[in-house]
Image 1 (cartoon, one colour):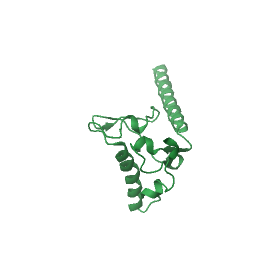
Image 2 (cartoon, helix red, strand yellow; image 1 turned 90 degrees about the horizontal axis):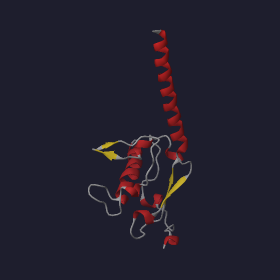
Image 3 (cartoon, helix red, strand yellow; image 1 turned 135 degrees about the horizontal axis):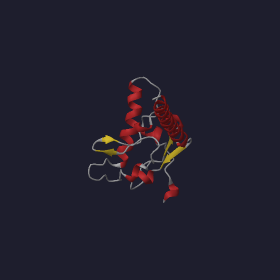
Image 4 (cartoon, helix red, strand yellow; image 1 turned 120 degrees about the horizontal axis):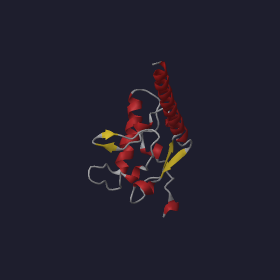
Length: 142
């Protein structure tokens, strides 16, 4: 009987170790630099300049607050899974029930910042010109 208990304990510990390694791997795999969200990816014609998104400033959030894959109305994406570009599901025009890409960014980013601002917590920009600085329209993409 003691032998069976040790085998079960060994399996539990091995599973816990594997889970911990997966989480550490996923956390370290997250970009540690700014990501440029370029206007050519979001708009048919350039309206605003690119947005510099600082992934390190958002590391305190759960990854699933931004990354998602919905099935039957539930986010089934989990840390460690592939991170797809937003535009792989959200298109410029929006399709079926998918939210347009521009609206998806604004709903996700600006809404979160405004909610934090209402709670009087430290937040990122909440106005257009703070995310899309003037004079930074990206001419090199033409």
